[in-house]
Image 1: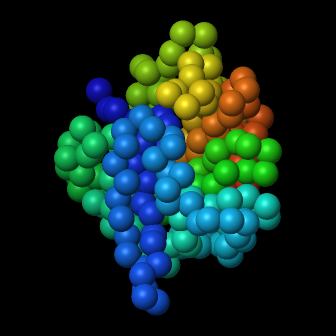
Image 2 (image 1 turned 135 degrees about the vertical axis):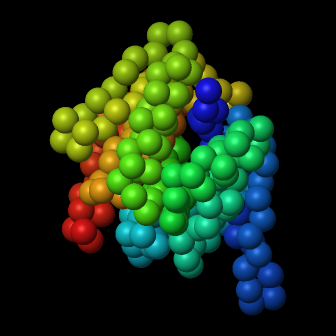
Amino acid sequence: MRTVIRAAAVALAMVPLTGCSVILPIVAAGNAAGNVASRPAGGSAVFKSGPLGVLPVPSGARPWHRDVAAPMPAKAFVQGFYEKSAQSHEEGRFARRRYQSGIIRGWDTASGAVQDVNIMRFATVNGAASEFDELTSALDDQLGKGGKDVTDSADGARGTANPMRDAHGYAEVELAARVGRDEVVDVHERTLSKPDPGAAKALLLKQVNALKGRH
């Protein structure tokens, strides 16, 4: 069974170093605070739409890392999206599904929620369909006590709202949707209060609509 990161377990931090940027994987499985070290100190930042049309960081939000300058190859994406124990297996799956590129962007909102957007692009419709089906099935398999399925007819989204808290007290909603023939979008909304499906739906629909405008 696929193991999906449910608490931003692995993030890519981009640390400025004498005028350039070094990408450092932060491996802290199941640890949302693993991203804290990668966030820039002080203030907020607003990025323009990034690679593959990923949404900009909202005004007033605190980004996890510097803006990404290029789409991510399979290895980098897998390391950012899956728990360490699943990465080797998922790299093989991504190769078979003919993954082409992807992007991960996350931030802390002004209200204290933690959000991220993950875009995956495949060379074939079958690759995208396979990724979406397995991802959403895994979410159902891992749904905790008191959790519920979440859907949205506006963009065909499927996912779950999980009230079980992670080690840092966050509850989570995760939703995924397909865009066009070859893309899959996955979003997380984590809060210290009860899960917020409405916020996750709004974030995903905004990203889906932005991508549709590029097709």
